[in-house]
Image 1 (cartoon, rainbow, N blue to C red):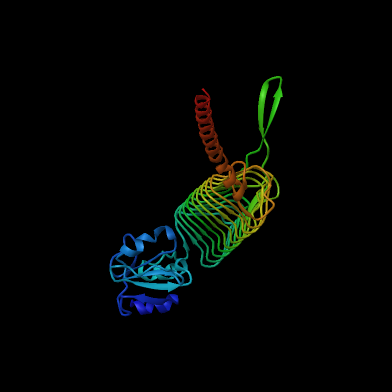
Image 2 (cartoon, helix red, strand yellow):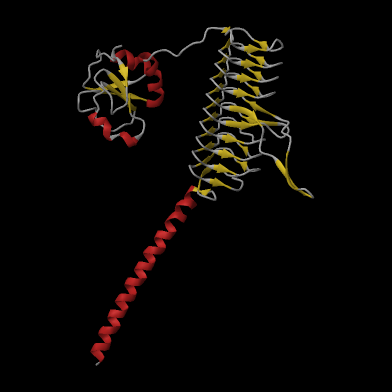
Length: 355
């Protein structure tokens, strides 16, 4: 593909030494790019690599004030380098694997299950009694859709995904390898009797409901409700290794990143963003447009939009102030010590002069 054709495709403006008819044959990072590759710069952290990259063209923001690569490449100015690069990648990579409709001979599909049109069921997958699978769903190898579970149209379950009994998925839900939807929540009662201590399980009788256009990463777990439903709002994106406990409810358009844990009955508003390894206690209310930064511990409600950080969580501004206080105290102590030394020196000098 010619550079000018790529520019037209992504709606970009060319600037630099590379000619419009230069051939673009691949995509790569700034560091690894070779002549013929297109790369992109979206994070200022990598700005230093722009000068030395060998890429023929680099996608940059319209307002980027950096010069073109020294090796003679061009800048391709666009509104969003991330989105433009996403358009360019499929042109130079192998297409995604598409499953042809059909049921593998080793799959187990209960006679009472209902499958829509053009469904793929892979090797050793299991579809339980009363389950309903929407049109054009893909159920990969070893995935399990248990009794009376429901999948909307165009869902994709990757290998080893388990959808437990009576859970419900909306349309176009994608779930990656090893994730479990609808395992029992953590609920127990402890009793002390004549025979000692007994730990009794509290029945987990609810389900999980997942909205349209949700994507869930690998080895995540979303527990069924004790009663009612654990709810994942539409368009929410969940990363790998996330734990969501029973009766949690997320609003639409939330983002939950790796190793986040959310305890039972906590409710997230619309557009909540939770970064890696944050932990949320149970029975909390998190307002719309809250952003919880990495490693934050949330022990109380967050009722105002904004960024939160620390343990316990406070606004980012307050967290920065708290982090600076110890340093300020140390600086103050050093200043006081210096003043004391000066005062002592002055007193000694005056004492000597007095003699």
